[in-house]
Length: 111
Image (cartoon, rainbow, N blue to C red):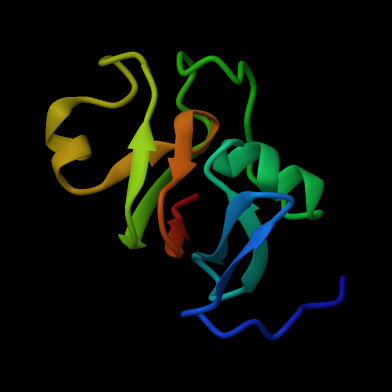
């Protein structure tokens, strides 16, 4: 996979949609990044750009796509409290399938 070097503070408009830089790091310190928008989930953006985030349901119920947002703002859609309890939400854990960027983001994939 070819990794693009995109400055973290980069954002632009594409076809009238505000685009953001999404950077993800896994537990082995492997990094990927892509340009995404607030109109698609982090999981959908990752899949479009060849970035592997484990998932099963895409509906917020299984918890397999759990990530932690280290930097950036996002909107969190509805998800099960059983797989994402309030104490984890308070620590910026979220589900990639229900997370929509509102700024540039740095994400940790905890597997």
